[in-house]
Length: 429
Image 1 (cartoon, rainbow, N blue to C red):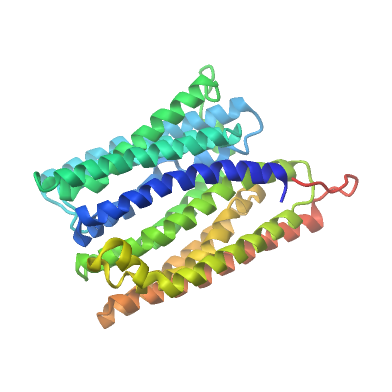
Image 2 (tube, rainbow, N blue to C red):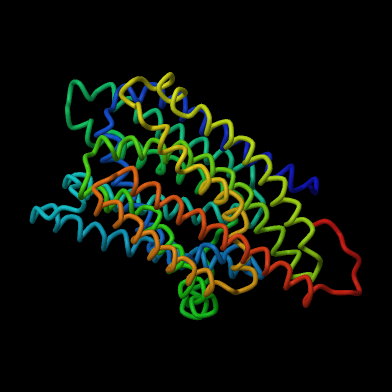
């Protein structure tokens, strides 16, 4: 692969590996300080947060990378900041009313409802700074930002877990509140980097409506696509929590954490670097297919090898590391592995639709996936079988994700046929 791709990916991946290595070591303690009930409740909380974060900026931050100049990128960041603040304030008002009137959301306690807007706000601002840093190739800052965010959240979670026997409230709020404080730390660090290097500035009283209209496809197609995708991915925790006990949700959520998190780290790392470099390649009408296919093949082989080992030893490994109360997690890990293996490659290439302006098809695929996932979960609920619901959900997810990966590769093939410039020699991008 091109040297700059390896260098930039290595920088981001190093930061992520260090951050998640610290988080993994912390889990050896956290899974003894908190119960499966605590983790099940926490992951239901996160499932709602991940959906609301997508609404908070209307995905305008994703356009920062492809903006033609820094002034336009700053306008997009300003627009995303304002939308994020507006939705967070609205969400806080709704959460306060629900808490006062006793209305619950998937049996979440009132205090967790009040933490939702805080996590949404700081995660939204953190993401905007991430895309500003990505535009300016601040990969070292991105890596350190991830370390600061994860380590800050990890330390506070451990502290709350140690205090839980003294004050039982920390069993409920310890894990979510640690995430809020971790995102605050990451936000503060990236804010410092972006302001110090002047990557974001306030354009002189420029109206935001024209910039919102120019990049309306991100709000029109990317946001609904991401919203549907996030909602359907978190549907098991939201829906199954109404019919099955929290310990079962805790086992499934632990399996989800230890498969989805590594998959997300790899996909986010490669997607950031490929998005920036591929945008330049397409703007210059240079060949793209060779590097994309080579990347997909190499990553696919590596992921398949790791997944095969994890599939064989998942159950004894989880029991050995985390204790006997987590027996049964291995089944859910095995169900998730095929989907997560395809997800790594597909999400690494998810920027392709943004570059070629074909977000509408992605949105349709996500709607289809949501409907199929709902049918799969409903079948498991009707049978009263939690494991069957998870298995069918994972099968449907893997099939749709494979179709989406094929769609991304087809777009690159079509671009290569019709839009590359014959007068320029191919070069690595």
